[in-house]
Image (cartoon, one colour):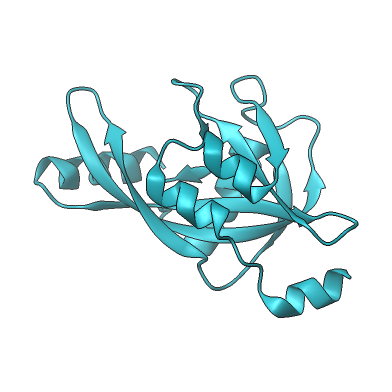
Length: 158
């Protein structure tokens, strides 16, 4: 994964847009309401969704699933179709670069008590409107606030 990040940084230095993948872990409450999970970033401790660099040999969907497990300690089914995209400014050592993020919904089936980044992150289940208020990136905030779960999924869970 480090090689992929280095490649992305090289692209950014040339002025090219770079990409990441993200997951929005979600669950439905007993009343059928949606809750999403946010995690804190390692450095600034802001609330974000699990995200990372594309992984060689893996689809964006698979990479987003892996990031959710590593950063949020959740397992589940990642939906095939992306939920949307957002862009943000990523802080590198001596500059900021624009990053486009493809977001996938992950229906959580299991929450791990211990996971790879448990000591470096906090996680929280929130209603989409509450989660949106905690997110600094405007495009991601809007995506979370207006989140729509595909209809067949709601029928399966009821």
